[in-house]
Every structure is written in C-alpha cells, then in structure tokens.
Image (cartoon, rainbow, N blue to C red; front, side, top):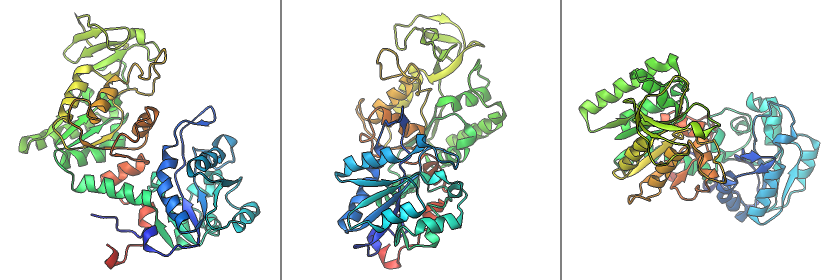
Amino acid sequence: MSFSKQTVRDIELSGKRVLLRVDYNLPMKNGKITSDFRIEQSLPTIKYLLDKHCSIVIMSHLGRPEGKKNKEFSLRSAAERLSKLLGQNVEFVEDCIGSEVEKAVSSLKPKQVLMLENVRFYPEEEANDLSFAEKLSKWGYVFVQDCFGVAHRAHASVVGVTKYLPSVAGLLLEKEVDTITKVMSDPERPLMAIVGGAKISDKIIVLKKFIEIADFVAIGGAMANTFLLAEGIETGNSLTEPDDVPLAKEIIALARARAEKSKFVFYLPQDGVVATDIENPSSTRIVDWNAQVIADIEAYPRQPKHEASHVKDDERILDIGPFSASFIAGGLQMVQTVVWNGTLGVAEVEGKNNDPIGPFAHGTELIVEALLGHYGHRPFTIVGGGDTAGYVEERNLTKAFNHVSTGGGASLELMEGKKLPGVEALPDKEPNNL
C-alpha cells in the first residue's frame, strides 16, 4: 500500500517560495548538538526543493519551552549544522512571526534557505491557533510537511497552515509512512516485535496489535516487570505499575490464546540484571526468576558466582539477563522482519571508564548485535523512534539499520493503526498518481 497523499513530486514547485516544516528537535548536551540524524533525514527534501530553484523557509520546534522564548531551546545551532551539511549558508532569524521575519523572507532569492526560530516559543503553536497558523503561512506559497516526529499532533505549524496554503508531503514523511505501514500490513515473515520501555499503558494498543499480526513478541524494559508481577514473580523494588497488572494479565491471556491456535511465541524475560543502587554497579548481580542466582558480579559480564537467591526487597531489575538476551537473539536468527520499539533495560545510564556500554545496557546491546547480523542472520529491521532511536543515535548506528524512525509517538500511533493529523490534513493523490 503506497503513500496516498500528494508529495513534492506531484505539484509544480519551480522557483516558488516553500514553507517547510521539519523536525529539528535534536538531542543536546551542554548546548551542543549530540546527533544531527534528524537534519540528515530532512536533506533529501531540501535538496529536491533546491534543485527546483525554490527558496525555502524552514520552521521547526526544539524541546518543550512551554510557550515562552528561551535561548536554551533556540534553533540557531540547528541552522549552523544544516549549513555545514548542505554546503551553503542558511540564514537564521530570531523569531517565527513578525516584521523581522517578513523582512528576511522578502529578501530570499531562489535556492536560498532561511530558518525561523522555534515555533514552540508561542503557546499558540501547540494550541493549533488558526490566527497563528495564518501568520506562519505568509512565509510561503506552498507548504511542505516533512515532520513525521509530530505528525501525530494537531499543531499550528503542522495542521493549521494547511488551511491557508497548497500543502504536500515531503520525502521523509512519505518514506516513514510507507515503510511502517508496509511492515504492519504486509511484512516478510516471520515477523518479530521487540517491545521495551517503561509503561504497558503507553503501548497496550500496539502490544495487542503485534499479538494479532506478529509471529514472535519479546518484552523487555521496565514494562516487563509488571508482566512478571502479573505472573506472580517477585520483583523487589523494581519499577512496576501495580494498577496495570490486570492489563498485563489480559495481554498474556491474549498471547496464550493466539499460541494455542497457531505457531506464536510471546516471550517474557527469564533472568535479569538487578542492583540496589542504579548509580553503583558494584551492587549488580544477575538472577533468574526461579530464585537461582546465575551470577554475582561487580561489572556485568564477569565469571559467575553461583548461590541460591531471588530478587530481594531492596533490589531493582534494571536489564534483561544474558539468558533472556540470548534467547531473543536466537529468535532473531529465524525471522525475516523485526520491529524494535523500546530499550530492554536502563540503557541511558552511562558506562564507567570510557566504556560505551552502560552497566544496564548489555541486554539491549546483545540484541543490537543480533539485529546487525553479528551471529549470522540479519533481518530487515525498523527501529522505532523516541528512546530507541536515541540509543541508536548515541551508538552512531543510525545508518546500520534498514529504517530508524524520526518519530517516537508518531511511529507508535501509526503502528497502532491510528490516523495521524499531520498526514490526514494533506490532500489525496489524484487517482492516476496512485
């Protein structure tokens, strides 16, 4: 099923001034960009427009400035990075509406690029205020929506401006929707879903969807703790959602019912990395859920020290264990398509002594190695956005996977089968262009 909305290829753009919405919500540390993945993903659309001799006015958001001007969330550094990647100067204006913007826009010549300041400096953006959207629309004659990351939000710069300008999708938006939709509707089988993250409630719809369509579903992350709780397994001081235990039981029941009717695997972790203090890896050890310690260690992995035990009251499960990671990695050798959404442990904790792998990221890292074919077979892999893409970005592996989504919530909602406002607001293709 191909993308059904009009794109930049479907209209005449030569020499026109284009208002382009992108997602430059970039990861920052100490005021510096740590990954320009989202900028790189926008380049095909920008270069396409420049080849058509368009002038381009770019708008984006960064972070959550809560409707107030805040230099911490300025897009100036994004404009500077885009200049380097494009190999040409990108002008920057310190607002997104008003006389200064009007002056900068009116002086644009063909093949020149101007970036506006963060649209979220105005509360009207997230409120989808049509008066604000109309002001933004004055900066172009055509609107190109290429921001998949907030396509699930009805914001002024995403949906509102489509009421005032001829509007089409950019090449990134088209690629994201096409790739994810195809995997959910017609994947090369067997299909495996690896779902991590913290909350079952955030992913209950997509979990049910995968139980319906996938051949293998593996659970990890803090979410797995609630499933373990539902199965009567002691989780100590682990992050759990007791109120969601009924949801977990419902999902487990659905999985078992599916497994009775067809070849289907629903996998919960069998062992895990636990610690009393997330900042103190010396308290780390590995246990299985049958109360047998697999290893007692200072820095995972080390030589096992066996003793009988269980997850203690003051311990937290912070990663899947080596057996669980190996089982999932083994499953990856038998599937053709994988959707991975959510890390399998507290992967954001940094490693010590320049170790790129944190003490609670080894389970995730083993899965990454399997996805990349280190153990023989390499399946087609879609990496969901959000924290999952963030982990891949930190490891400089964005180009190693078949598709790394630029949108967390948007990719999740698309997988769930929901309509995305930022896509639905665009006109459909003509019948002869489908």
